[in-house]
Image (cartoon, rainbow, N blue to C red; front, side, top):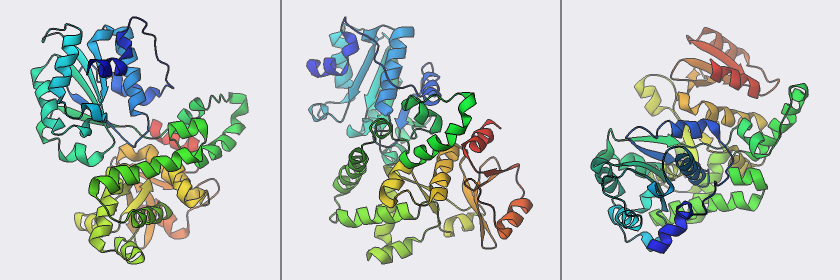
Length: 390
C-alpha cells in the first residue's frame, strides 16, 4: 500500500513543485473558504468536470500557505487495489509512513469516496475522532443524498458545474479587450456549440465527449443497476436531449420506447443521479408541482449538441441560462396555457429570448402581470451577468 500512497502523493517527495491547473476562481474560492470549518466537504458533479483538479489545487494551496506537505493526504478510492481497505486502515498507514501522532492535524482528500462500502460511517468516525479536515468527491448524487444520515449536520455538498462563458475564454486563452467587445458575439456562439466540459474545451475532440457519455451510461448506470438493454437507455437519453428546455411526458416517452412507465421513471432517476440531466418543477401549489410535467435540462450544452446537433440556438441558450441560475432554485411558470421560463426562489421572473426574439402577446401579458420582485428578459450573456449582480 505504501507505494500506491506515494504515487498518489508526489508532493511528499523532496522535489515537490507546484502543479499548474486552469483556475476556476469562483468555485475554488468557495472551497478555500471551507478549509477552516470542521464539516466534511463533498465535491460533487458530472464525471470529468474538474473535481480532481480542484482537489489538487487545494492541496497546492494548503502546502504553500497553511501546512507542510506530509500533513496533506490524497487518494483515489476507485483504485481496485485499495477497495479491500477501510478508510481508517488507509489513514493509519499514512500516519505510520510519516510518523504522525494521532493528535497531529491532517488534511484528507478522498476522490470518488462512494467506491468505499459504508463510507458514510467511516467518514463519521474520522470526523468524530477529530484532528483532520476532510474533502471528498463523488460523481453520483443519489449516493451522497441517500446515505448521508450518519453525517447529518457534519457535511456540506458543493457541486461543480461545467465552465461558464468567462471560464471558457480563460481555458481557451482568449483575451478580449474593451475596444474589441464586438468579438464576444462570435466567441459566445462558439461557446454555445462547445459547452463547458474542461477537457473537451481544450481539445475539441468529439470522441472524448462521446466517451464521457458512454462511460456514464455503461459504467455508472448499466453496470451498477445491472440493466439488460443499454440501447434503450441510450435512446431514452437521446429523447431527453431533444426535449431539453421543454415540458415532457414520461408516459409518452415510455410509449415511444415501448417500456413501462415505472421503467421510464427509473431511467430518468439514473440520469439525474449521475448529473447528466437536471429537472425543474412547475411553480405553484403543491398539487400543481407534483402533478404537472417537469422540464428537463442537460448538465452541459456541449453534450446536448452532441446528441441533437447545434440546431435550436434558443434552446441551447436557455439551457445555459438555467445552469447559470441553478443555484437560485428556478421553477418554470405556467398559467393559462402560457409559459415563462423561470421564476426563482427569490422571486426573479426570467424569460430567455436569444438575440432578437420577442415575447408573444400572451407571454407579455403574463410577464407584465405576474407579481415578482424583479423581472428580466435575457437575450445575451451580458444580460445574465447583470442579473447575477443584482
